[in-house]
Image 1 (cartoon, rainbow, N blue to C red):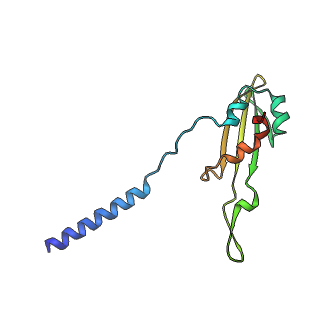
Image 2 (tube, one colour):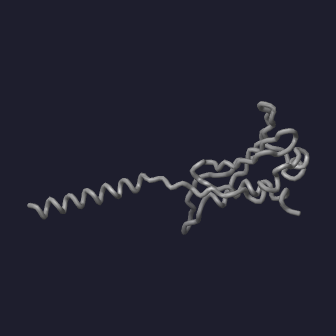
Length: 133
């Protein structure tokens, strides 16, 4: 009976480790500003409007102005082909929130949509004309 009890204990410990490992959350690496974010900092509203176009939302809040831009992934990126059909994938995009103080860009925040997707490439695409010489 001792061997069997020991084997069960090892099995339960192993199962416990698998369960605990599945609950661990990995913190994503914090990276520095992207090329577009670096290019936009300090830019005037007029310069941003000239290179990126009008935002989808413009709002004044506590003495600051917020511009919100949004770019969704192209439709072909949303699915992958099968033999004679395609499978729908998660619809995703990126929202860029630009904060102005005294008519200059002071902060650029990218938010993936949905938040679990973690893809900010589409925000960079919004500002390609602002980065290009």
